[in-house]
Amino acid sequence: MTDTLGMSPNQLAMHLIRQVSITPADAGCQQIIAEYLETLGFDCEHLRYGEVDNLWAVRGDSGPLFCFAGHTDVVPTGPAENWTHPPFDPVEADGWLWGRGSADMKGGLAAMLVAVRDFLALYPDPGMRLAFLITSDEEGPAQDGTKRVMQTLNERGVKIDYCVVGEPSSREQVGDVVRHGRRGSLSGQVTVRGIQGHVAYPQNADNPIPRLTAALTELSARQWDEGDDDFPPTSFQTSNFNAGTGANNVIPGTAEAWFNFRYSPHQTPEGLQAVVSEVFQRHAPEHAFFWRDSGRPFITRGGKLLEAVRRAVTEKAGINPEFSTSGGTSDGRFIAPTGTELVELGPTNATIHAVDERIGVHELETLRQSYQAILEHLRH
Image (cartoon, rainbow, N blue to C red; front, side, top):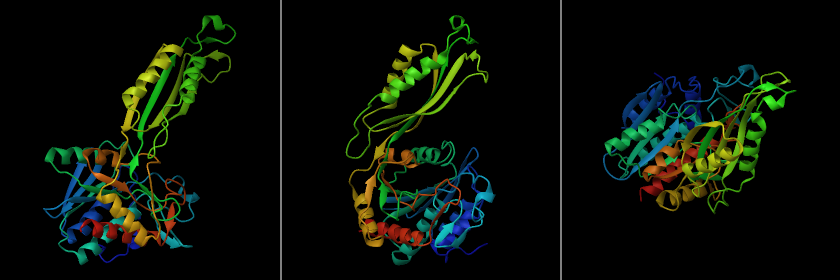
């Protein structure tokens, strides 16, 4: 067994990156993390739902509950030969730490673990409970990961007071952007039905393409709301459009589109669906929808955690962080609705999901110091 307890954040991140944990596989990462935490006095529980491995680890039995949350799964690499360095053979070179998961988010996990190690060395009885919630289903459907663990914790009456998610939130340097909320995400798939026929005899057919495009054009031009000081305006975007038989002389019988809302708290999924249904009823009455509600908007406004994060980043990264709700979804959407004060703070995100994913070699130490400082400020 590899002795990980004395590793630096970069060394521990590299150890985790070597595990080929393409979603939903964990590939042993959570066992590495559990062994590390058990040495620090954590009680570790492995929760497997379907094909997904999850880890819930807790230390202490009194005081407010602070949780670090993250994921061990990574996205596929694409052709490995396109990488400067093999994606699962991490190296430090040219001022960078290279490897799939270096930023998203095995680097963040490593910084969390070392931060807790160093914090407990200074404060073995910190006056609060510490926890880790780790999943291997963040990059996938996200149904059997954090979502299921939170359901289990809720059934047990476990309440997380503060949570830091290690997603790569930073833009140009660690801590310049901290997510304190996220927009909601609602996806739709619509199929408009027509009548297939020959293009030379349109009177015998019903082309669904003009009907579908008319509805999408109206929805795209609509101003849904103006947002507010914390949230940008709600956005509607079409992501896929499919129609046609492959022949240029055939009017298709169906046309299909996929679309997505990123919406602020001024909207609800039910309200958005009602508007879309009304628009399609006018333009294309023969239609069918499939909807996916991926997460409701959430935000942490004020509270002890935000102030602790602000102070920690200012002290350790030397900058005043921007608190933002931009970006995609994260597993924070399953934790925050329980009343948890939650932020996302992690490495820079310029190369996440890309070929040659990497972060600056200095980033994880800055992040480790910031995580430790957050804990120190919360214990007072």
